[in-house]
Image (cartoon, rainbow, N blue to C red; front, side, top):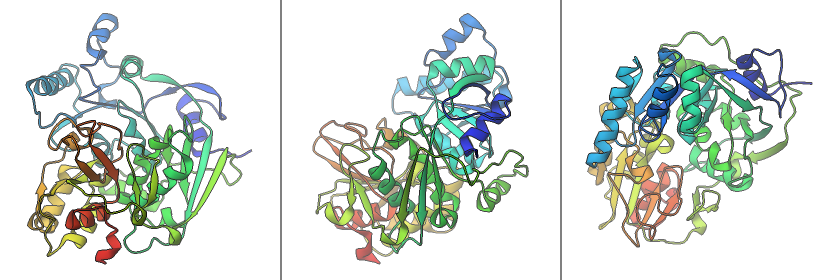
Length: 420
């Protein structure tokens, strides 16, 4: 009987010849990531000191201050300082701040490799699955055990196969594909399952697009969102200085899947997730002309170079609607610099966008762009939960960067194909 990617990766990490869905295994962790919002200051520091105040392998720990950077309050500043000091005190050289959302930084700096186990104190750690890694989020208490022992236990998940075939039409982006998938599977349809994406549509995508899809696997409840580490993925890693892919794995042709979904890319239209659930999805043409007060392009889901580039195509030579604010936050300092050098940021700024530094602040509603009561926001981010970006009397609509850009021009939710 063939094996899935998840089964193969967890077999390697547990030192077993093979494992099957449903097995409970202890695995060696290849990289452990903490952010500032759920990092050392949340129980870990005090509890570790009481038990064993040494990190099992500092070279395998990555700490990234991204949610509270730049700090908007004294409390946030103290948390970032505590995180920075804790990393230094425990010999963590892989510490980053003010450079962008943790998942993008993990990928750009070579901390996510095919066939490895990557755990992080953020649910969207599953983005690393686009590079063929078993990357998943864990709680702070579980992370404390990982920091001390370098191990954790996992139940080997069943796998849902998601196949997309064909070519995306003009005005349609990877974010639309992701929303369509989530709408079909449901917000809890993949709970504690691995989701494996395949098909000609996925194979033809650049890494920026793949990251956007794997990032949102958790919005179906998935443990991981895996893709084969093909030549596109390996080229991306080589560009980050990674030359070895010894653990890269693929699912066997006769692997057992608990469920399959098949989609046609030619039939996909621009999508939107309506408040207040990510699976409350419809074609954007059906959303109606909902007034928009804030448009946001950014985060670990929708702020990569390709996202900014496609938004700029919509906005070039135009001005955003009066009374609307457009916020743009590139997903990393690397992306910010590349977009600045190519003139993309200039195009966005001339259209009326407020171009910010790379941060998680807007997406999670802790600084830099909170919503007031009665305001609507269309966003390229990953969640539209009640009150996530500010007031509980506000509404968040999720869409692609192109759809966000088009909506910023009209002041209402708009199909980007109107500008193509």
